[in-house]
Length: 134
Figure 1: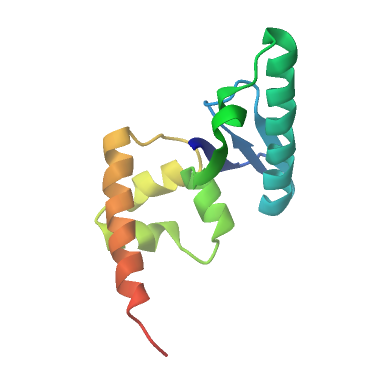
Figure 2: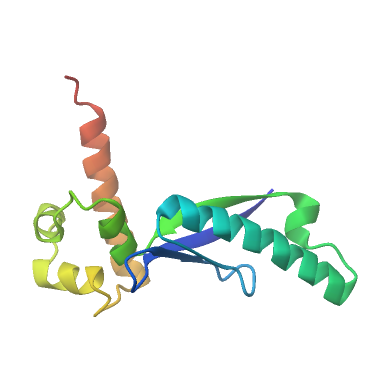
């Protein structure tokens, strides 16, 4: 089974866009995250059909089966979860709040190393929250 990494980001119109580097031309749009995911799924199928028409071969994703793993860029993350304050989140994970706000607004882009550090700290927070009972 192959995995398609799909990035969810905030669109300029306030909606969502989803793209992947794994399948050329696969980009979905929607006013809600759900709409964008549905559009992205339809576009994937169209791209697989187009691939077959152009090459005469079945896409390896279709042959082996695939799953889509959705990931957020920073703007998409804060757009999807508006109750998370970027400044407070940055402080909680030990990152410069100004830099996090730049990531959130697309004014700066985190390196892979920085993304991994943020992901690790985020995972720690989620793990700690999972132990909470009300």
